[in-house]
Length: 538
Image (cartoon, rainbow, N blue to C red; front, top):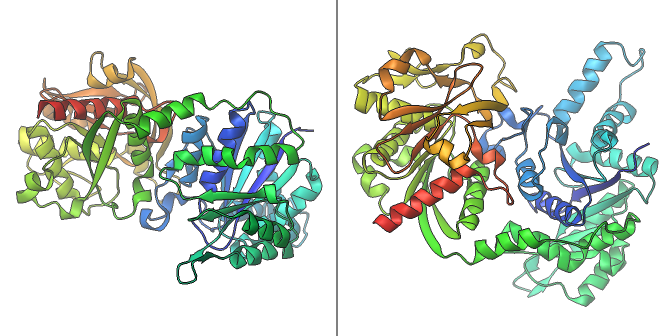
């Protein structure tokens, strides 16, 4: 029998209140008291994973070390805790039903009628306890996606109700996150939406132990008392979550509100050590008091929605803090880059990132931006598709392969310098079939990448179907444009660099997935330092 304690985070009133940030902040506070903590996300949509979802629909798709395509909240969990997540940390309704149907097809239910209760709820409960039963963790925090009252969320809420009954109140608790809206016309905060949300939760058989209230204004003592009375909790269990400048302030706000103390008290746990947020505070101190400032252009196809490039933006925050640099990110839609006016559109930048993406839209804009960065010695960082476009740009403009392209953009292109990976050519299904997860890479000694990493053997996470076509190695690469990293097993080109340049690096992998508050990614740090040097030179 495992001694793991379970915390469930539910949401009410509206979506996008920040359950993931609250869960990650609580986990950080518990981790800072020497508890081993992990967080998992249960999503009510029927997709098996977010890998096939449009970034406009769902934000970025985060990838774990073991190759799971997951919700972007898992990125927050890793960035806050510096602990790797896995397949087990993100479960969707699609995956639950898929598993139950497979069991039914194998005859595991002995001819019984398969129903939501008990079969679906049993499957959910098994998944909820999977990480806890490993014996690795003292506390498992489970975030339930969506809002209470949604038809999609009902099986999860019922599973939580059953699990609390199974585990006992000292081993499990529920945190309910709600909104306290401010009505400007009346000049007051309104508690009624929260009351209704808590009532809806109670109708499902669950009493919230702690209520976290998202708000734009301070909650008065009277308002807290009123909420406590109506929502059947003690006033110290009414936690204010006021809007802050950065998500990295939230753990400190939760500490000031005493969230971790209430949680430990309810779970009958004593802190293993005094709360130690020294390194977190140092990060925030540097982040909030920069000594330098730079402008970085982010060229992408989905820049209208910030969450599409969430991990890249957070990686820049981590690199900015460690270098004490304020980074202004200028979002540039690749479709709006006109070949004749690129210089003007990129004016004033100290560095350029060309972001990942899929499909042909906006490709020529990316190539034009890369050509400008290479010719004008503007520090350049190409990620996944960005690296592939750097290869195409060099092939076209320097080597003279004018028809160079990727078969992703033009299936019948004359010179496919970027082509579908051999292992992908027979694959028809889209979901979960890309090259995913951590793969090894050997670096060329003294390359910009090797200098950044301070080693020559690395492992990075991937998410792609297309790669550099090795048939073109001898035609494209020369003493200036070089292969700086390859996969030792497959020979795939992982990193390209342009030598006659202060800092020009393209990577086939996604370094942004591994950057955390306590361990900023070395390539992002090197890129920021190169951009600082560019500004100083100007």
